Image (cartoon, rainbow, N blue to C red; front, side):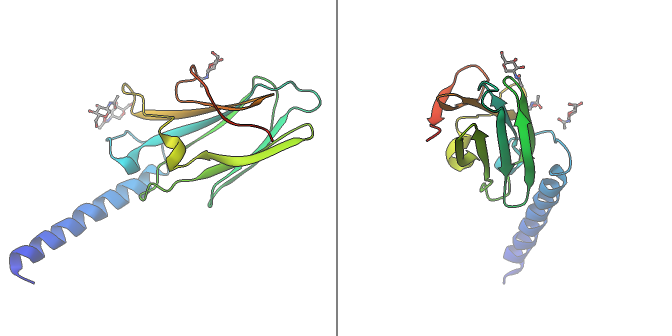
Length: 153
Ligand SMILES: *[C@@H]1O[C@H](CO)[C@@H](O)[C@H](O)[C@H]1NC(C)=O
Ligand SMILES: *[C@@H]1O[C@H](CO)[C@@H](O)[C@H](O)[C@H]1NC(C)=O
Ligand SMILES: *[C@@H]1O[C@H](CO)[C@@H](O)[C@H](O)[C@H]1NC(C)=O
């Protein structure tokens, strides 16, 4: 390799290495966001809007690496978690919901859904709010305007 190309090659390695170190460090605390994809911090909220009869909502959320276990959410209660988008932008979380005799499992965060939850300009953090209602599952990026994404069946 010519000397100049080699220098750029090693400089690139240092820059990539620096980002990798920062990205893994971000996993351990809620970081300040610098605006690049893998620094984006997202919080997913799961909210029950179903009656507590015949049973309150139960939900188990998982990714490939995490299992948050079964949570019981009475009407109005929520469960949430925060994460840093992974380096490759392939972060995937899915949840299994149970209510009475109904149950449904689907992805609550992936590349396809992330555009529903854009970062808030003033904070650099984004939120995905999921409401489980008697007629299905609604998603919002601002906890105000909702879009129905899934049915129970
Ligand atoms: C990070 O956030 C803290 C508190 O939110 C703030 O005081 C600090 O200036 C921020 N740092 C950068 C580099 O934005
Ligand atoms: C959000 O990110 C932008 C671009 O990196 C930065 O200029 C701004 O200071 C950040 N805002 C906050 C509140 O951290
Ligand atoms: C979302 O909105 C509801 C109803 O306005 C409110 O009770 C709740 O605290 C909000 N959640 C968050 C995380 O802001």
